[in-house]
Picture: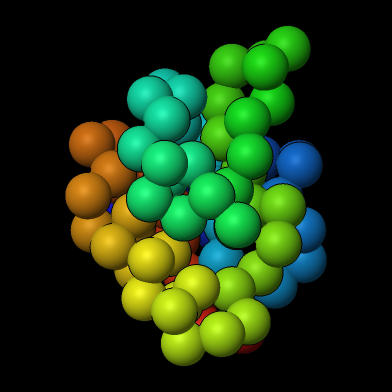
Length: 77
């Protein structure tokens, strides 16, 4: 499970985030490309846009469920 205390710095503020466990596998960027991007210099993904539509929320939820290292979190704030 993603740890909100270990969020990567690149995440935009909001309830969705990626933590330091990310292995940059590309799954979240493929599943929800409108919400996740890569930090290629550091080798991780991050939330660059919080999900705003039901479709974006659904795709982000799918990415969270499928993340192989459980690095995607949604803390409800």
